[in-house]
Image 1 (cartoon, rainbow, N blue to C red):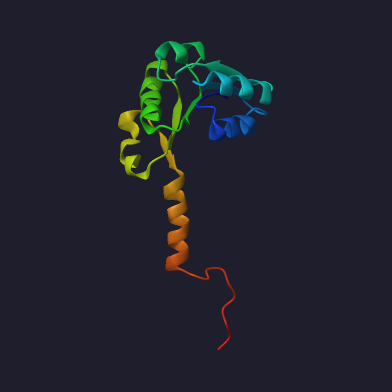
Image 2 (cartoon, rainbow, N blue to C red):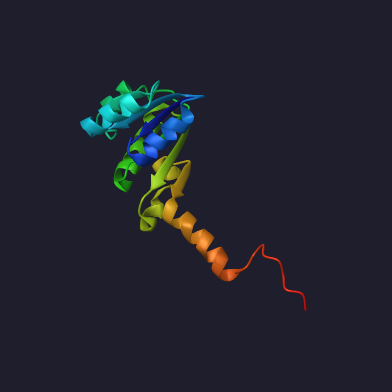
Length: 143
């Protein structure tokens, strides 16, 4: 698969490192120093320094016809803009990171997002299950 990741911070770089063994990965990072560090850390990745909200940067990154775009910046507004722009580049699938849970409702097909991931909501779901069903999986005491 050809995968483009917008945002080469901890999340984007981690994803790229995991995907590189089996896929062609391009990262887009706006901070020059970070882009340079990630390029040296991730052998085989293509790193583009620029703002992923700019169509010319997405073009330079080879977004046209990519199999997957991951919008993984630390800014929800940027992730939504990148997801919307992906539609103009005929990307097969768009996954977007939701940084602030209050913004989750925006991350849908209308905005170009196929799958939205909110770490806060995922964590809440796990905590909620533990509160509702404490001891799930533990051995019951004999009566």
